[in-house]
Length: 387
Image 1 (cartoon, rainbow, N blue to C red):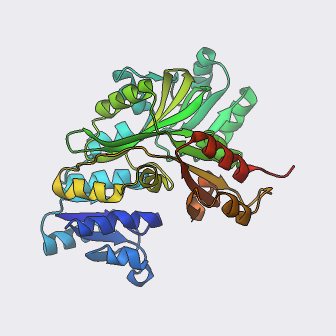
Image 2 (cartoon, helix red, strand yellow):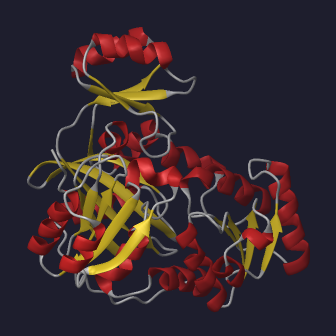
């Protein structure tokens, strides 16, 4: 099997996907912009061959890379990055080389939040009222129905970048005065706790692995208000959340892909869909899958691609939590105090790449316990601030 992996060097821990693919027997053909000598040893060891391009946004250069690999190794069987930023590029390459996976005709359904709403509705899942607004008059017409506050976000945006909560007409005027020249969706603000439904589906859409996470707050608040964040996995998924999560996976026709679907819990057993992402959940969550279940999701994914199947009998043995810290905040407890008191629970301390720090903090503590009370206690200790 020939798998072209776009951007094998970033984020750094995605090198695990490449190394497991190679161990499973695939030719792993990397395409990226760093010099080969600048790649980490883990990235280099996980690749069969590497093709450097000067600019990864240069589509002709990517075509040449894939043409070279086709000439040398034969038909390309998969083209992946597992990175939301490159989803549209992946789809275009798949069209041009007739590769299995999400194609250009499908990309808007998983990239445009307005199109996601249609699919959520088809699955019978509640969504926030909203639509793409073209100008301030269109926005005011929507707000007459929803009232303030509203949330404005790029229809095809990534994460919470350029996302705003508007409290009143002054905020609305200010937003349109600085609005980027891209389509924006505006929707009612939904109050509730944020849960995700995450996992991996096989080629037929069956769930190979699935779990759920609870978030201390939304990424919009984390980024815009420079907060730290925490989120943890559940050992037992609420039945109503699992049921609508499964419906969404079916409605979005997830095949041989990771998924990350976000919901607001507005009342016990009641969920409103926020958005879907057809890639692994962000940050170090794939590592958290492994810590929570004592497994290797990188190997599971690689075997799924290479063998077409992945037999995984998993148990959610632990709650696994990520708690971040920001360099601009003064914390009560030093790093050494955290490790001295809770070192037995710690499984990883992660330094966050700068591009992710607004959402994930500057450093992240990953820890696990069978007891949710432990998770809450450790999180409070990590996040305690002065003043």
